[in-house]
Image (cartoon, rainbow, N blue to C red; front, side, top):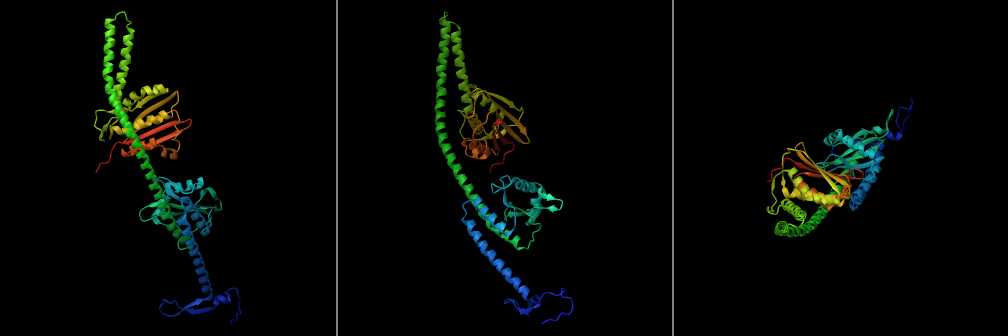
Length: 437
């Protein structure tokens, strides 16, 4: 019992003043004096951790049983919002070029995406990845004279090898203690969720590779048929030569031995024979019938190849009602490539243009030398179906073939086709090639 004669406001409550002696089973030395209030707080904390571990175990099981990345992310969002009050919780991963951060969720707000990528471009994320600690950034769009209503808390997503992205939360919380339960809980959940997401992405990548292999196997089988047709065409071109010579001889004989025959008739025959001969020679020269079939990189004059190709397809373009103009930069350095690869790409591009062609269209082919790169561009006034979106391009066999051939040449191919704007195709060749081992 205590008798307090002075003011009681400076004294703590009675139950807080009660004490007892205790000793940790693993400790050595004297007993330690513990208050009942501390004991009660420790019991509450133990219950809190026990509850958290149960929820964490449940979360782990749900995440492991999820079938796709979006489902894993939705489970993660729900769990994090139970730990920390947040308006939005999004995981952003770097794209293949490491230039942009893309949200896993398709319903992420535009303002959240913009704010996260701005933080990356401003170099804030570089510091976050260096320190490996979460950082709070005021969300300026909700900033008022009294302070920020919302803050953006960014956690780095990484492992020993590389940085994969960030966890970004929009929340009214203005401070996160490094040793707080909330911070550690989010770090633990991230360590569970990130390997699962990366595993699913790797499986998707492997499945995509299998699909591409099957597509190219199918394309290869079709190419064998095309090759057989080409072999037949080669024989036909060689066989055409002799009959054309006979026709010319008979035309001369008619003109000499039958003077009463109108002179314009033999002349017309000679002109038509000359056209057929020129077309046959162009086709034979372009397909390289007498050259070895083994692929070999060599200096190639891209402008000359484009001009030869235009001469071959001119008649087809006229029949389609398409005008073709060349705007080629002069005195460009040659590129190191396989001549057959370039011809295959030009032929594939022509097949795309032909499939989307309409009367009274126009095609412009340009070449330009820019910063150690040769850029060959094909512009057309017409939209081509199958090139509007990246997903449509991925399912287009011809587009994939062009991209693979450009990758083989250490370059890139870009496609863009929109209504009222037409179609643009860029083939970007590097001037310097890597040394082959």
